[in-house]
Structure formats: C-alpha cells, structure tokens
Image (cartoon, rainbow, N blue to C red; front, side, top):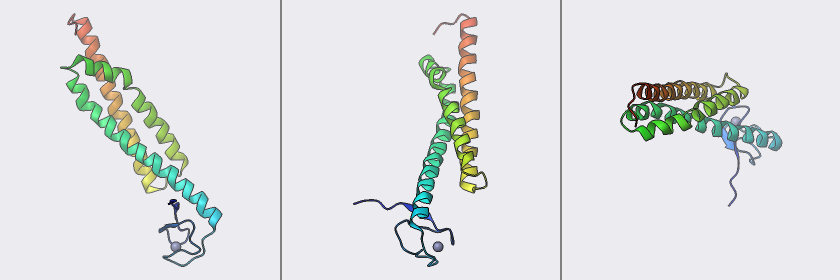
Length: 142
Ligand SMILES: [Zn+2]
C-alpha cells in the first residue's frame, strides 16, 4: 500500500490527497504537479516543525538535568559534552523554518520553540561549565 502525499488546497486551504482530480471540500481542480510540489513542501515543513518541538523539549529538559548535575558529576560532564549540539541544531532549524515563510503561524510557533530551546540549553550548558569551574577552583574533585 502506497501512501498518497497530502497537500493544502490552494483555494480553500483544506488538506487533500495530491492524486485527487478535484478538491473534495471546494471542488476546485487539482494540478497534480503543483500538488506534488506542495506536498513535498508540507512534508519538509512538518519534519522541521517536529524537530523544533523535540528541540524545545530537549532544551527545557536540560535545565532540571543541569540542576541534577550538581549532585551527579557525570551528568554535568554529559551536558557539557553534548549541550552545545542542541542550540546549534535549534539555530539551524530556526533558519530553515524562516525560509518557509515567517508569516505562517505554524512556522512562527516552530521558530519560537527553537529560540526557547537555544535559551534553555545555553543556560544549562553555561551552568554546568560554571559549576565545574567553581568545583575545580574550590578544589572539590568529583
Ligand atoms: Zn479546496
């Protein structure tokens, strides 16, 4: 069973199958090539929006994790090791989403999620490094 790509009707904005001859909501004719292009665009957009939402979860999760890192030194090391990857990917996703047209409310939401992810993960990363430096300076080796 093959999955038919879904795209947004140019006339009414409802989601319809790209291989349909006419829109099932407003009956306007569907141009197959344009529909396929639009379907690819929607798929890319959804992939980026999914990533933005995961990045926000990851980024905000790093805040409590960096707090736990006060007790568990290994966790702090982990945050320092991978913590810069999350904001980098979030910034990249922010830029990619911007190319899709910032007027789209879904895109705007995705971009906000990216920025939250950057802010939280950078804070957690700096916190983890700061705590480690303080512990080293204070001579408490963990
Ligand atoms: Zn329609």
